[in-house]
Amino acid sequence: MKRPKLALCNFISDVNELRRFALAHGFDGVDWTFKIEDLPETPMEETRLLKTVSRLQPLDVRYHCAFDGLDPGDADPQRARTAREAFRKACRVVSKMNGKYMTVHLGLGRTSMEDLLWDETVRELAELVRYARFLGIRLCLENLASGWSSRPELFEKLVRKSGAGVTLDIGHARVCRSVESQHYAFEDFILPHAECIHNAHVYHEERKDGHVPPENLEDIVDRLELLNALPCDWWVLELREEEALCSTRKVVEEFFLSERRVPSLENSG
Image (cartoon, rainbow, N blue to C red; front, side):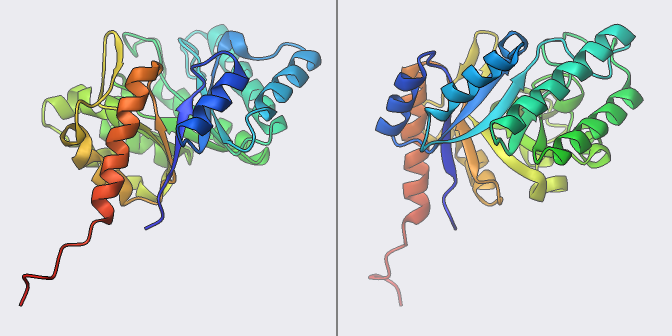
């Protein structure tokens, strides 16, 4: 089975240093995260961003929109309109940078989904998927640690009804209430739409202070085995501290090495 590409986040602000670090540590790409304040406001800023990202070559680049509190299905019409405009703008910017994949969230940064409308969310997500497709982008929905996308049965409906691709976050899936309560298992985020999973976020688990790396291969081996059986070819080691990132890289390499081992036949027969 072909090995997936390993990517890191744009956790180093100096893009030349980010490129140097990625190549020195054997990464294949960068998962470039936008916050809402990072979106260019003018054509000049767009050109500057394009030049910045182009300096990452020969690394591949995919895009990730971390827009806290912005949801196109917001019950507040003005906030919903603002969200729609922001996500469409992100699609246009990514298209100009020849991006082919963009990850989005629903309910990011919210403690409750009470201010979101389900039907409007599904409809607007489907519309955004179509808009992105028109621009040559595969829009992917990420499962979060809480909210609708943290529940496998609702995540499946969101993906199926909208036509979105999937960004599977194995750290979010581990700590979500649906899995912690054992009502669902990690594989329930995979089985209904395995062919739609285009990106994976790999680390141990999310806690209040951020993403935590695995201490050893045993922490994540079961999830990596399931992930490795999918056609997904983009694994983002989603750690933003150098030590945590490198230790996770080491664990993932250990996993690939163990997958390549062939049992000895010397004592067989």
